[in-house]
Image (tube, rainbow, N blue to C red; front, side, top):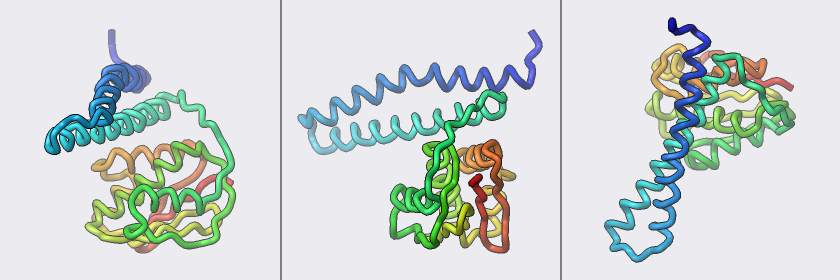
Amino acid sequence: MEPTEKSFPRLVSLAAHDLRTPLATIHGFAQTIVRMGDLDEQKQRYMEMIDAASRQLAELLDELGLAARIEGGRYEPNLQPVDSLELAHGAAEELGEDRVRVSGAGATVHVDVDATRRGVSALVQAALRHGGLDEVECKAEGAALTICPVTASSGPVLLGDDLRDLGAAVAVLLVDALGGSVAMNGDAVVVRLPE
């Protein structure tokens, strides 16, 4: 059977789905052992690391599954209203208030809220990580979120042109699928979300 473009996203989606069962087992037992608390300090720390890594793997599988659904034309967003300022604050809460300054008045946008919240956080994290920065600003100006500064090396990553960050690449796919856009504007990336 000759593979087609449409079969590959389905295969990726299936793999992401099937990996969840063993991952859920690992995560569940890691949480149980951590909660039992009868381990010495070093083993407790290792179990906490396994628990955190299993959560991170689950998030990566979510992103991979979302990308496969979008690329395969099977993405059906659950559009809900949310304030763009709330999305900016979500990134600051996840990545640290000391690393992400939030400003602006925001406005109501209609997006797949959970996926967009993860996407905004991923774009902000990519600006920090790939720009070698300690702090960025995420400004909610109406339906647009402006992330700055964005360096020359991190800009292509945030636009999804340089595939070095899964979260950022999927965020760009998501925003595009929702009818928005991600574009450079000077030393900033502007994420326009549908109103």
